[in-house]
Image (cartoon, rainbow, N blue to C red):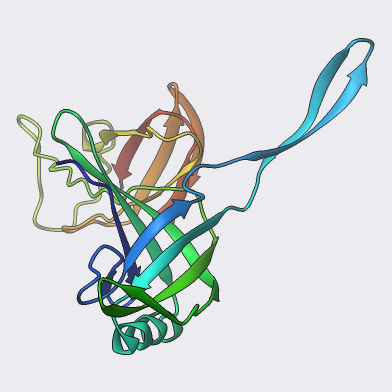
Length: 227
């Protein structure tokens, strides 16, 4: 049986399940998983031309069912003691693959409707609304192992010379999303004055000295050059 999953995560690495009514809670009637645009047009004759198109801030809402007051208090403690909340949405696909999508959120409101008589158990229902602080994104980590080139010359002492061409290395980052994707790059091993050259379609766009930058195209070639 393929079932979507909903979870909350915080900056401490803790996870709160929104799918476990026994130990946590069960979130149902979930809305706001999509997105919408706010678009301004100008009329030109009988046609309309887009002049401004921006993504709107979303809301994720749902009805949570808690087994008892202890679980309800546990939820309140989790969201109120967390500085950064992420909403995790897991999706099962027909090919058996399950993908995880994250969205930064902030709690907007939590109601308590009181006790609900259901199968002789007293349950608490709550309408919960999250403010969305980002679009959906995936957490991916790729390790590029860059091996030595054939007949590469290496020196274990300082040498008054400069080698450039064969010390360049390149990797390709694929951005499969719809918007700019932040990429954090970490370079290990021994490097002296490393430089990062950022290319788009073989055109050198910028040279950056920090590990945080934005990849604007679906395929970007990053050239490492050390001197």
